[in-house]
Amino acid sequence: MKSWSCIENCGACCRFDLAERDNLEGALSHKDIDLINSMTKKDGWCKYFDKSKRNCMIYESRPHFCRVNEFSTSFKGYLKNGDKFLIDCCKQHISSIYGSKSKQMKAFKTAVSKK
Ligand code: SF4
Ligand code: SF4
Image (cartoon, rainbow, N blue to C red; front, side, top):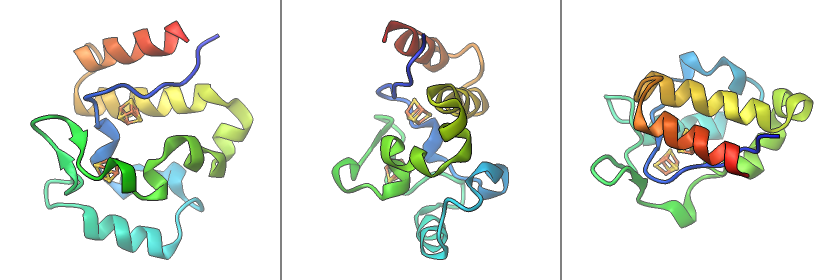
């Protein structure tokens, strides 16, 4: 059975387009949305994402909605389908940012298969 796992040097979920994230409905407060908007640069990437290293510059103090293990419990899809829901979300993000045949997708598939 596959288990969700985040991989290093990805950050595909650090580019926001709330219009494309309809599954977040109900999981984010108005305060969260204001925070996301304040973090989002014109190109859609989070201002705390270091594009050259592909990592989070505020990892230890990142907002709660960036903490997948904690935040996922707010989703009906997670409660129903568990890690499969998270794996599908990551695949969507990785595919849209890096492509379905990217090295990030390959690394992600390997990581979730190993556990
Ligand atoms: S898309 Fe998934 S694997 Fe990539 S950084 Fe986000 S949570 Fe981690
Ligand atoms: S705060 Fe960090 S983990 Fe959250 S979106 Fe920004 S770069 Fe990504």
